Image (cartoon, rainbow, N blue to C red; front, side):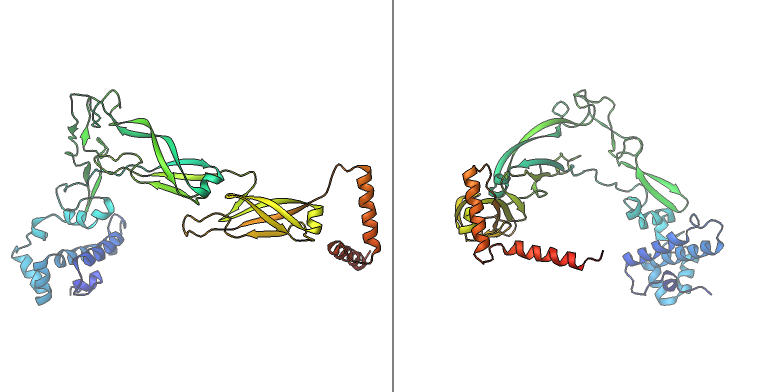
Length: 384
């Protein structure tokens, strides 16, 4: 007794045509004889799935099967009914199979070579690496860039054929750009080996572009760089890439940013850092210090007893984000500078100051004392 066709394909009775194809495709790929040589069981399952699909994919036969079961379709087949030999209105199973697997092999579906795919192709994208100063990256700018690209050959108007001649239709694929190969039940479509998918042949190529239909040229373009860009950011210029093929759209140009190192500032995201050298006297008794920002100079108040490494934050003096519009901060790291090139008298004055500091009974160097206490404890804990 024959198995239920829906059960064979593993689908419900209300299955759509698309899901029916998917179910058959899955079984066909699994049990096809080419994939299972000398496997009788797989061959039988493939034939079973093929028969089920041929019946259920035909609306008339499916309706008859739903009403009368196997008797309905067996009778129709015996009378040479609407489907004719092999079902599907006389189409060969190879054509059916080619339709099912068209999405895998790139075919157009249907028998007889089909309609072929459009040969229009989008042009390639281009990338230009742009070096920027930190100031230009932060404020934004407009730059002129010059880069190599391809344009349609003016000698042959992009046809690739010598002036006065035209490309001819490829005799192998008939201008479709693909050829069909039959392998048992499989019907495969492949790129035409003669015209390489173009569908055309050029017997007398253009001397300027050598049959390519386009030539290389350097192009100059003005590009607006938005404020706040950073290294690794890209600016997309639509339609300024390589031209399309066979009427396809042009690609895009991507301008990749590389922000050069700055002599004063270091950038971390939207924040800027800078080192601020302060004299030992200003750090000790306090004072004001003039620091640079990208918007000009500002006064930075240095409190008394400031130590090396102290960070002062100037809010909003960093980089304005190109994405969020919020501004980062400028962080000034203090470096207390020891005086150099002292005279003998200056050294004596500092020595006198040090003696007074040691004798007044006040702790003037808390970090030094803490560090010395730690060293002392370290040696006491050591076991020799």
